[in-house]
Image (cartoon, rainbow, N blue to C red):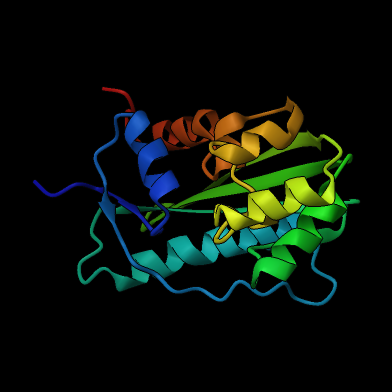
Length: 195
């Protein structure tokens, strides 16, 4: 019997986190534009992109049947409205880190579970405070290459952890897939994670 659960993400971090829950799943490659609409709040934007990924994944299945598709998105939000996506290049990464230095930002993670029987959502918001970073520290971190492909130009599960002075919320949510909320979502969808 083929797995009912599909993950609409190529992120190795999301694969690893979903595996931690003990769920059997198949990865789907979806391409969804990540462009914030004018006037769209950061929370609505993150939730919409996650839902669009899940819906695109479901649409890509030839025979969806009782399949459930999990879609997720995570963004860094500063001052309630400025969304920091993935940096375009080294200069962009350094600029993001300068803005986050010595300040608290929100990390918003939305997870959608979509199937023929309906759609369910969970949202997790964490508060992350960065230490004050000097230019040599920023340059050294950008030079590692770790900021690329990461919202807000840092990875809390990597060397970026050394910049995080305080975390109030979900460590896995900051990584890209909040495990508590995802497990609850899967249970509501009829999938029993971790056995």
